[in-house]
Image (tube, rainbow, N blue to C red; front, side):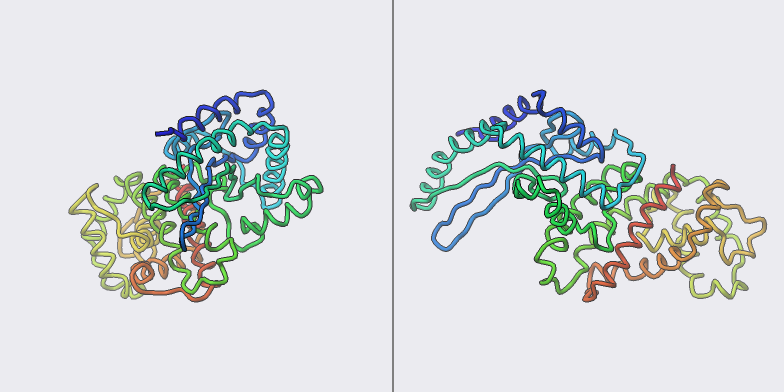
Length: 375
């Protein structure tokens, strides 16, 4: 069988070592961008239309990377110091697109297309044997940055430098009310699994929200699922990082009479339950998502409504404690989000785009806060 993937990988490894590619690497490094490589297979068989993008590698940090796991590991080692604004991101991607399109016009990628063309007879024969039907296959290679096939942007538009900027901003949602998490300075401080979930969620977001399909969305809640899972991983990280201090506070909550704390009345049962769970299972305790985070930060860390506990001491160091005290609005929103989480996943539908944007932006702020509390 024609080993297409290996041939494409071998050829791209040669291409990225060419001196002409140095400018591309420089532009990619400006914003921690990477190029997602794929080839497309298109054919029509009876009433079935196949239009499939098949990934085979990535270009990042001056090297070719074969797997997504390898990409995540490489990105985790690079510490970015700033978040780029929407204008800078659009300008960068425009410049990278222009450079890659220029290399394409100079036949830099002709060997790639030759490999794909040689592959067509084998693929057509394979389809013919399975379906006993003749079929004409078309195939091409694509280079994707932040969900945009940069070789698909009109070359004249790239040269004039206006239409492409508008297109890129619309395609990435850079003029929307959503912050792109993977473009924020704190992203690389997240757990590797968290980053994997966010990147997966971003792909779905690009496909559904930052596209023409957005008008067909009835329920926005599926767009949030992986982002919520990402938050839950970071909550476990926070719990393990501050475990010793959290355990001491849990013990004091269990052994204190909090019945006179009137402001605590509606949360008292949940607070005691969480404290008892931590005291019983120690590091084996599994935080119940965003709901537990609200109790950890609002009560265990800040000591809100815990005046009955003599000389309460936060598990956070003073500098982090002062940082958390400023996040009153976020903590109040966190309480609501925590109790809605199960409904959101299992039954609640989000019909309003405005509600989706509010919840999404709170998730962004929660992840940012959790990185600041552990760094």
